Length: 420
Image (tube, rainbow, N blue to C red; front, side, top):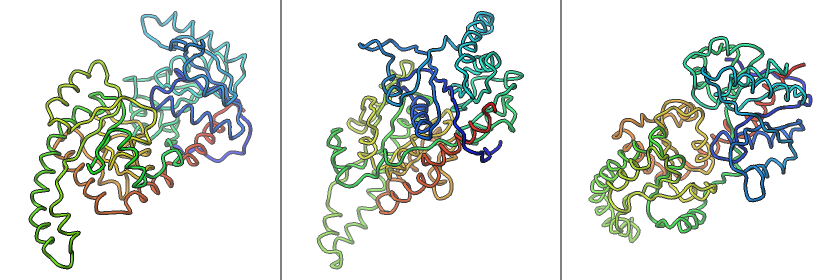
C-alpha cells in the first residue's frame, strides 16, 4: 500500500463513473461531495452514470440537478454488469462505452463502483485512458487474477479495505489509502437548545437518554444484533439505577449538596430509548418488526429514512454503528463525532480503524450482545460525566477525517495516475 506522492498542480479532465446520481447511499454522497470539491479545485469534471432510476416528473434523472448546479457534463453508460454466461455481449457493450470515452478524451477514468471492474478494464484499454478504481466497500470477487492489472490503480477508503482487496489479488503496491472525509461545518456540534428542538421535532422526550442508529435496517448492518442487545441495555440500566439509588439518597441528606442532591435522588428514572432511523430491507423487515415488538413498549422508536441526519444527531446522546459485515470506512462514525456525539462501533473494518487512540475503547464485537449492551451504557454514562467529550469528538474528526486531507489525497492520486 502506498501513499500518493506530491505532484505539481495541473488541470485534469476527469471522467467520474458512478451508478445513479441520486443519493441512495454513502457512495453516491461521496461522489457528489468529491465532484463538488474537484470542480472547486479547478479540475474539468464529467460524470458518467448508469441512469437506472425512472425519470422524475420533469423527465430528468433523479439527482441530476445537484450535478447541473456544478456545471459538469453528464453522460450515460450502458449496463456495466458482467457475467460469465453473457461475457461476449457484456464485453461488446463495454467496448462501445470505451469508444465514447476515447472521443471524450479524459486524462483519467475514476470508477467509484469496484464491482464494475470488468467494465473499467475494457473501457480503459479501448479508450487508452488510465483507470483509477475507488474501493469503497468489501470485495465482490473471490479472486481477481489478471483483471486487476493493466494501467489500473486503486484507492482504498481504509487500510482494512486495502488489505481485503489485496487478499483477492490486487497487488498492494497498486493501492493508495485515501480515507474519506466530512465537512464538519455540515455536521455542527449540538447545543442544549438544539437538542431540545431536535427531540421535539422527532417527538422524543426531553429528559430521556437517547441512543441512535441510522442507516439501512438490515441484518448485515447489525440492527438485529442491536435489538437483541437492547433488552440487556434496559436490564443493565435498571440494575445500575438500583445500585446508584442508595448512594444518591445518602448524598441527598448531606447538607453540602442541599436541594440539588435531594432532587437528583428523588427524580424519576427514565430508561434509555433506542431510535432506529432508516428503511428496512425487504428480506429483513419482518425480522426487525418482530424484534422491536418483543421489546418493552416505547423502548424503541422507529423513524423513516431522512436526509436531515443532523436533526437525528442533535436529538441523540450517542450513536451506535454495529455492522456485522465490516464497513469500508464508517461515514456514520465521523458524522456523529463531528456533531459531538460519542460512538460505539464494530471493531472490524473501517469503523474500528477510525476509532483509534482515545477512542479505541469505543469498539466492540457486535455479535456479543452483552458486550454491546455494556459498551452502550458505559458510553452514555461517560457522556453524562465528561462535558468535554463532545469537543474532543469534533477535534478528532477535524484533524483526521476532514474534507481538506481527503480531497488533497484524492487529487494527488488522480494526478499521479492520469495519463501524461
